[in-house]
Length: 248
Image (cartoon, rainbow, N blue to C red; front, side, top):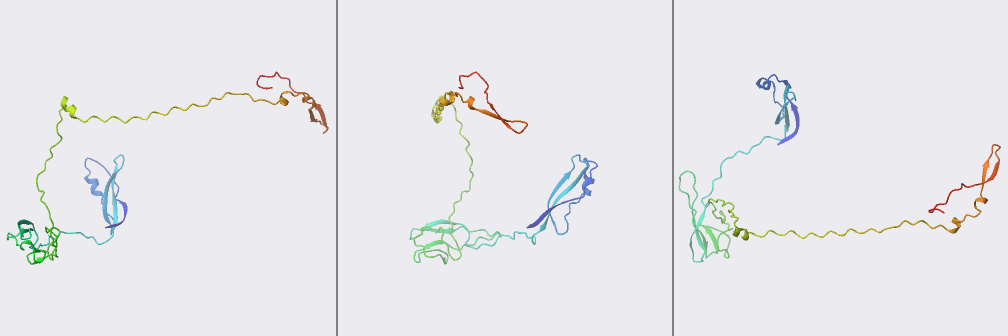
């Protein structure tokens, strides 16, 4: 694995001719510092193409480098291979014959014997090696012995080709056989717009005492401060205006 990583840059060199960049690349070295591993390499150049350099991703090694090297397949025992049904025994269960496995050296495959059900013991046996009691098992699928395990499988090896999409002829009869297009769902009618209440402007009603001032203005006096810091009282006179319809 890799530990912490950081960026590093090679020597930035000028580019004389992009048509022949060999001289430029020879001056650029992609080297990490001592004890670092090179994880990534990026080529960078200026917008005008006058210089170039390498941007490096250098990482610390997190441990001793390790690799998984294939050493070959483990040898299999003589009981490994395929077993095909041969005939039924006295209990009605099938006996299975070992088809053998090639050893790869040209020698004939070894046969461990017949896989059968021993009615006396109530066990499935492969030669002298037998499983645990399995009187209720009609076939050896899932049975295990000391040196063997039985798994059922089917050979689906073959050639399967797609038939493609059937061609539909849009004749009058074919159109009738096609399913009808579903009707769109009914739309919910919109709710009616609520009607707003109408308001009519009304002038306020004044009290009678506000409409008839009488001698109110005659009793109001105005106090003024003179230059001698004395107060003088005078009668407050209102400004005569024409009455309006909206104001008394």
